[in-house]
Amino acid sequence: MAILTKHQLNNQTMRLFENATESVNMFSASDAETTVFLSHKHSDIKEVKELKKLLENIGVHIYIDWLDPDMPKTTRGETAVKIKGKIKENNKFILLATDGAVESKWCNWELGYGDSLKLQRDKIVLFPLRESYDRSWNGSEYMQIYPVIEYENGSNTNNGGTQIAKGYYVFYPSKNNDRRYVSLIEWLKRN
Image (tube, rainbow, N blue to C red; front, side, top):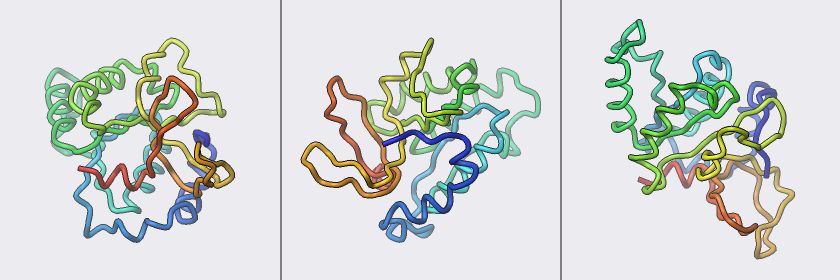
């Protein structure tokens, strides 16, 4: 299993996803009851658009604050109130965890607020996206408590010895090497 690099997301997202999961067709736009609040650093616009495309391709509705005409044009207290409402309103919360987002005060604030509403209900994940395959959270070790989205290339086996199919998976943190996981599509379907 591996986190994606920015290069992979930008250049291979659609091809990877189309080849990765057989159950994509089972989760069509007509079934899309899942809505996702996408927390991100605004300077990661290219990566935000790619992740939005990937999730919308499987029928998920994505909320992005700068696409909301009701969001104030200038950041102020009202912005925070509206963002809190959108985090509550959407079923799921995904943090596009780039280095910039991890360092962002706003993203950390959103993550903390989302944590209080969604962690115990399995409705929050990180989508780590780095320049390299480095998975450290130096200075932000608290992020190790969250499930993460990773890509499996089909070459690994689970603890039972069964090969893990290609695709995107939500991996849950573990104190030992027994990593629990579920396909991203299955996680998105859960209400």
